[in-house]
Image 1 (cartoon, rainbow, N blue to C red):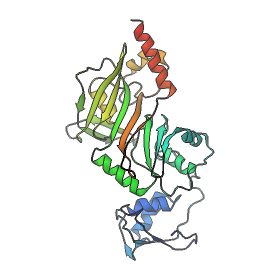
Image 2 (image 1 turned 60 degrees about the vertical axis):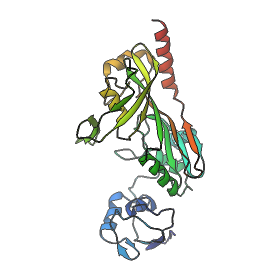
Image 3 (image 1 turned 180 degrees about the horizontal axis):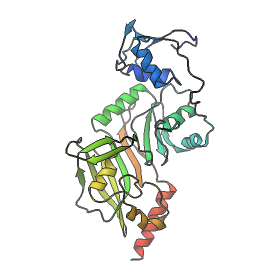
Image 4 (image 1 turned 90 degrees about the vertical axis):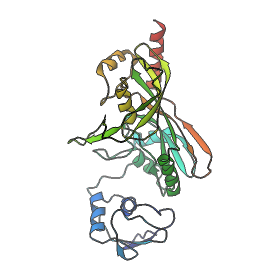
Length: 320
């Protein structure tokens, strides 16, 4: 149990944290402590598990006892996110499902799923500010910053393990809606193209189709057609970084307002629609509930900007 004494603390691990890496456990346990300091105390052997040194990748077991040394936090550290901040308050409105094991959000476009890379605010930090008494809140999967829609969060470690296993075993169905350039051919139902991730010097991630990449597969279905565009349902079978965005580009139909893989001429054609954000929305997620074992499908409605864009495109198509 956590001891408020500023000296050494001894923490008994229960089944709730079994299987978690020691470095990840400490980063949550020692909130506000820089990541570099966590790895420093591990490397120097100041952290002991059952009186022995361990490496950062050590996985905790039920019954382990961790010795945590006293750690001083600099006053210059980023202050905790306030639950009164407007962005945090908006997250409360975005919750579309919640029970004892999971929480599901309709993530707004433009909000990162976690802080970092120059951002001190993300969905997970905001949720922790909204739920200060929650012992455990962790992302089950991720969405790009500009992608909106269904985002699943685990409220128990056992739930996180169950949901991660479903992801590994491809037992989770993700359905996205994307507005793409031109007329998507009805016969193109699957795109299989290996993806290779590159990290630029700036830290920016860029993904491209490459024979050296990891196998990747996305299934597509045309939902609606317009004069210069198609609304498609994209269901990724694998879960690679930027997968849908790169697969649509590879098929010759990039997504509207994609600042990395898009087409500026296509974006100009949509000028009258009022759209100015990536048109990629995680519309639905189907999975097995980690506690009840029942199949659960959660749907997230599109925001006003996406709905308005489609309305303008439908009106434009009727004038042909």
